[in-house]
Image (cartoon, rainbow, N blue to C red; front, side, top):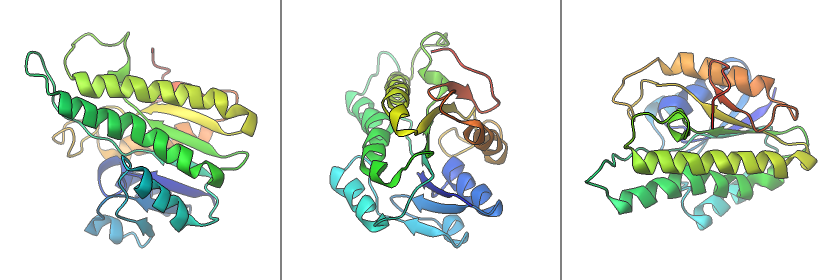
Length: 219
């Protein structure tokens, strides 16, 4: 049995991660700003009130965990804000960078003392952050923040390899959640694939940009 910490765990993909991990006998620690009835019903450890854009809040999370070892850190928290030409909103573009890219890096850095040799980090990015795959434009803040997140994941995979910590950069597919107005595949299907990718992660394939189904995606 391993210990997994999941950010953005109160709904959508994060909630489903916690549900499936619990069902297979793992220990799941759920991290969120506000919990939900569905999350509370799982009966797992919930660390609420955590804002991943705040150094102080993320530091508080690390302090709450004390000396708890984490086997797998799943950086799942993320937001989508619509940004199209010519109605760009630079405030929401910055917000997406703060949450989607810097938030995940901030959490990872704060929790590194909890990650020992053999630990894994999963970065939940998006195919919309693939430069080569971008054929439709728009979504400026989301696309740009996910490119930055993927780059952070790639650098982490290199810098953490000497510490024997592997990093997966993952695209879940188009998943039916509040973020997507419930268009796409069920979260259950997406998380099954994502967990399969995390299970197969090792130091040799660390830094790979995977689709949940197993396809290696272009940068």
